[in-house]
Length: 98
Image (cartoon, rainbow, N blue to C red):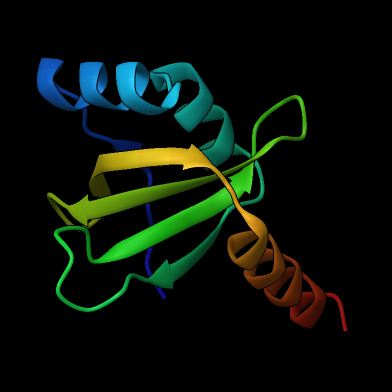
């Protein structure tokens, strides 16, 4: 289990996420402040974990993150969640509500 209290942005990851995938700092904050679930990322990739959750409009986002400090994480990339990530998120949420 990880705890993410803050996302760490710089010009490089901010512009990459926004230009390539439409993920803005504001959307990422909405996901973080909402009901995200955290999972280990695929081994061998730069980001160690992914955060999956809805923005304020209800769109699910998958955001790959890398630890900077204990509670501060850097988004590496992010995109609107696809089928497998949506199912993973729904299964995790379902387990919490049993």
